[in-house]
Amino acid sequence: MSIKNLGIIGGGQLGSLLAVAAQKLNINTIIYCDDVDAPAQNFCNKFIHGKYDDKIKMQEFINEIDLITYEFENIPYETLNEMNKVKPVLPKPSVNRLIQHRIAEKDFVNKLNIRTTRYASIESKSDMEQLGDFLPGILKTTTMGYDGKGQYPIKKIEDINNLNIDFSKGYILEKLVKLKKEISVIITRFENNSYEIYEPIENTHEDQILKHSIIPAQINKKIFDESKDWSIRIAEELKYIGTLCVEFFIDRNENLYVNEIAPRVHNSGHLTINAFNISQFENHVRAVCSLEKIPLKKISNAKMVNLIGNQIKPYRENFKLNENEFFFDYQKKEIKDKRKMGHITTLI
Ligand code: ADP
Ligand code: MG
Image 1 (tube, helix red, strand yellow):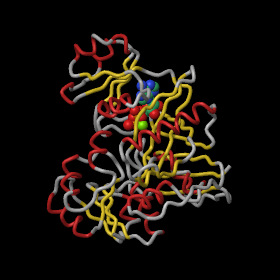
Image 2: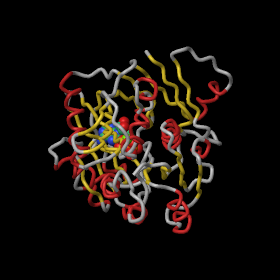
Image 3: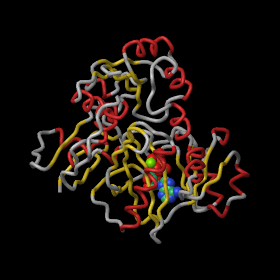
Image 4: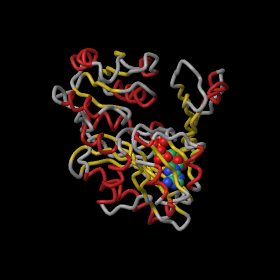
C-alpha cells in the first residue's frame, strides 16, 4: 500500500522534523497532540488537538490517515493497541510498551547478554534500605521520564528522607556509572536484516539534558564496533520498523553499557539532517511507509548544540550564520527554562 497520509502522535520538535522529512517525500502529515500549542502544527498538513484517551478525537485522526507513527514513547499502550486494530501502527505498540517501562527495557537488554547499569525495582522505602550496595545511585520513575525529569540522585540512604517520593508510582534504582563519555547509535530498520545505521554520536549533557552532539565520537574501535553491534541486535530482536536510538554510557575503564533505548527519532540525531545524505527523520518515514532504503553516505563531520531556554534569543534576532551553520527554531510559543527551543548544527 502506498502511504499518502501519515499520522504522527506527538507534536514536539521531533514531530516537526518528521513532518518536514515526510513532505520532502510527498507524504502528508496529520499530527495528533494533547498540547494545543504543539509546535509541530506549524510544520504539518493538519493538526488535531486531543487527549490520548479521547476516543472521538482519535477516531477523527484515524479517519484521516493510512498509517500511524509516533515521536515520543509515553503514549498509553492501550491507545496504540486500539489504533493498531484499525490502521497499522509502526513501530509496533508492543515495542513501545516494553521500552516505556525502564525495568522491562533493562530486563530485555540483559536477556540479550548486553550490559546495562545495575538496577533494582523499588516499591517502598524499605526496598531502598536493603540496596546500599547500589549507592551512589539514581532513583528514577519507571515510566514517563524524559530530559532527567522524575530522577533523583541518591548518595546515601538518608537522602530519601529529604525527598517527597510517592513509592506507589513505581521506581527503579540504578547504580551511578562513573562516566567517561556518553554516546548514542541511531539505526533505521526496514525489515529482517535490512537496516541503515549511523556512526556513534558523542553526547554531552548538562543538568541531565542533552547539550552537544558530535561526530566522529572520540572512542576506541572496540566500543565503536560493540555499540553498533548491540544496536543492531536490539533492533533485530524487537523486529523493529523505523528509526531507533540506543543511548550508551562508557565508564572510566572503557566498559560500554546500554543506558536506554528510544523507540523513535532522537535529539542526538539532529545532526544527521546536515551531515548525511538521508536524515534519521527521512529514514524513519521511509521505513514505516515501506519506501526504498537508500545507502547512507556521510557528507561531513558535525556538531549540534541544543538551544535551551533563553539561549534561542540571540539566534532569533537576525544572527548571521556561516555557510557551514544550520539553525533550527522549533517555533515554540513560550520560552521556558530547561526547554529545548531550537538547535544549531555546524559542519566541521
Ligand atoms: P532520560 O529519559 O531523562 O533521558 P536517562 O536515564 O537517559 O533519562 O538519564 C539522563 C542522563 O542522566 C543520562 O544521559 C546521564 O547523563 C545521566 N544518568 C542517568 N542515569 C545514570 C547512571 N546510572 N549513571 C550515570 N549517569 C546517569
Ligand atoms: Mg536519556
